[in-house]
Length: 233
Image (cartoon, rainbow, N blue to C red; front, side, top):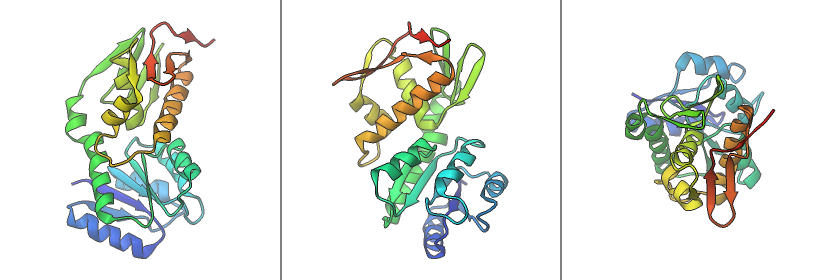
């Protein structure tokens, strides 16, 4: 049974979410003390998190960063904030999706199932043990780990899927449309800016491993990962 952790201070909304999620067979826990969100997360060990932005004590962006230090599980923001920058900040701080309030509970359940399939279901199972290596850079698809020169860095599910598409087609241009289709194939609509945000995050992860200029933007076409990149000193 998949476990869903709800970090939301609107009790009425929490009750409605719990009611709908229980109908679909999920185990659900909500935060009871907003000063100890991290420890509650560690104790519950959820498969997915629903996270509001406006919270007592610390905001959702803060708790998203803390959870990312503990886990790569999918984190779906649920917020009444509709601004583009709010959505960008959610992704920049480690979120995997952003759902604006008010929302249709069936859509929330569909998105939860979508992210669970990617993280733990048939797609994830199909990649067990698979690795891709390009010029010493190794992507462990199952563990969502990127390695280079004895350094390792963890990736989010979406970052790993982007690199999977780019590395297995290294030296070739991968269109934006292909990335959107392969990574967000069952979502009705994805803001084009979402891909820009994730590409920037992938570049930052590469930079941590001292790899520069490997991920190229091909204007009007898409992106290309090259093997003869510049190495940072």
